[in-house]
Image 1 (cartoon, helix red, strand yellow):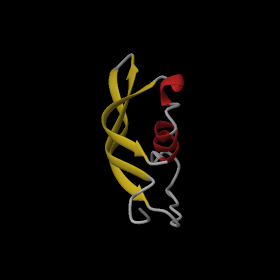
Image 2: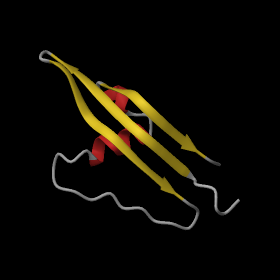
Image 3: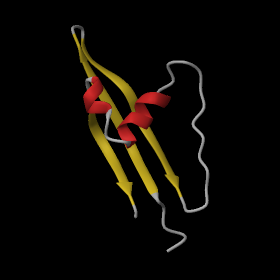
Length: 76
C-alpha cells in the first residue's frame, strides 16, 4: 500500500474560453505523489503552477477553466 501513489496526475490539459478562442492554461502535465514524499512545483510567473494546483483541487471550474483532458486520481 505504501508504494501506491496518493495523487496521480496524467496528461492534464486545462482550457479557458476567451473571445479569441480556446487557450490552454495547462498542457500535458503528469506527476505522482507517493506516501512520505514531498512534491514542490516551481517555475516563473505564468508557468502553470496555480492552474495545475486549482485543477487538482477541482476548483479550476470556478475560475472559468475546464479540465479538457487527462486523469486526476486520489487515494485515501
